[in-house]
Length: 145
Length: 381
Image (cartoon, rainbow over all chains, first blue to last red):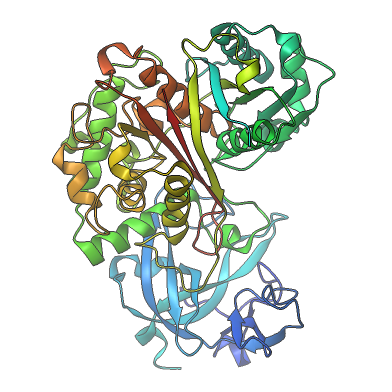
């Protein structure tokens, strides 16, 4: 799936990713508490540890696959069937985040696989409207960017 | 702190009850528990009703008052509780607290679901949660634990399938279980894939059904003859730390350790366990958290026969969620129903010889790669 940045669609949820020029350089957006030196994804409205203010933080676009599965039953949200999800250890912050996986790369999934974030039209949002979702694809897919 | 006694239990058959309402099912279980204890409904002085799906599926709220009045109980404080898969066991926890604190003397806890309807999809952790919108459903969560456990410890698909085979074998001796036909490893692994590597026969089915238990202070127990003692009730929520270790479930270990500490017991003191086998890998993870084996050895334990009826520590002799089906509001109480039946030596063909101490363990919800809730209850005769 290489459809990032092609549509003027809303994100599945606000404030969870940013897309660069023409969709290249998509990054996850999270939060950081300067007092606790802790990062979060998604960004909480306040730090759950000190209840202080949270700064927006760009969590980057790369990581490694910690674990994964392919869901083969009828999906919700108009997601592809089958679709992959995994926990990804983000480079830099070290956060382990849940993410969708590129439906075209499901046969290449293995623990430790280097991944890069992409954003594209996938499924519908809570109101049933088409939307953009972030997903991870094997890192070399984006090497040309 | 007052001692807590388990005076009565009741349960409907689990399965598809298309012609019956939730109030009807739950009322049947409540009536059976009262009759089992020999307690007049008017003596009950607090009530809990647990259900996870009544509100989302039917927009039903405060169902508990309807259930309790259907068995002649009114005026007393009644609480409706939703806590995903631990709805029933969390209500049990609150009932024990009320008796221990002297706030109530006879507490009826009822849990039930009517969920075999077209609107029911896979359980998730709430539609507005980002994880859910990114495709996380409960089978996927456990499948990802399985992938990690296999990679770190060499756990095999066959070892996971052994859990399903064992529990179905147990269910063949349990007239109250929904699925009673024995299976085998090849059939389990050959059933349709739900979320790799978990096949359909490794995922618990849903069910309509209800269960109820009556908890009493000693002075309110109608007859001590068949009465059991609740030795520990532990409940914890997740720590939501990041990163979570998905092959060593910290919240599971913490709550199980808490139950043992409260009872002053160790794993070797248990004669049987009903644990949350919503998925085969779950039972394997719970073996490790419960201290039945070393971390990482759960797969080998599952295939060893030690957790089968007649083994060192039988687990899920009822057939478990995998065979009974999983109506979340009822499940935690159905586990207690099985412990009571065993500890009273009334379990027939599936009786654990000399059963004196049992543990019921339940987990629910999903948040940040952790559970939202975990309960462990220890009961003795």
